[in-house]
Image (cartoon, rainbow, N blue to C red):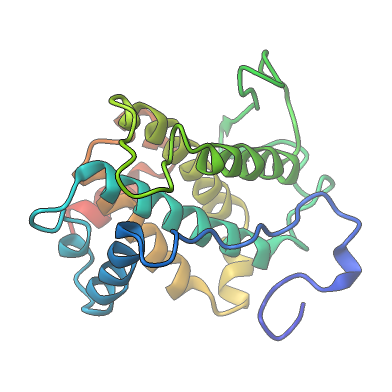
Length: 218
């Protein structure tokens, strides 16, 4: 583990590689919204921070927050990668819940994989979605697809599974790294946002139901 809390070069032979941080195009509306997110999060009121700013486009807001959550989950998991291996986590699970991977394209039928393999599949899949300009337009004036929310929902549903795995399987390690405050803040932000825009069905939140309920109804 290096000083940044990321896996050292000794782990370079493992499956997961932290992805490059995704950012909106410089000077774009997304870049301006990213600055607004940083400002509102700094206020400490996460419930207010997720609300759509007056006059802003809902799809822009969904897009920039989805990219932001991708960056957060990517970095959080990277800090735990040396503890989450095919040996320690031979299946991707959260308590009694098991998650199998399928994307309907490269992997058409759900397959059982280890947790690090699942996260690798997931991060690559999300990266492909974000880089697809027919889904996440990069140029000013290019419209989002009319069903953009339908693309965002499965991305966030699957991101939740990474949080669920971390809380169920690695929370003691998180505490040992003194990262629990950061994890909890990131997850609270995620829960407030997905709840505000009804992006994850309640049934899919079951592995962390008690924690989600405590966040939404303290």
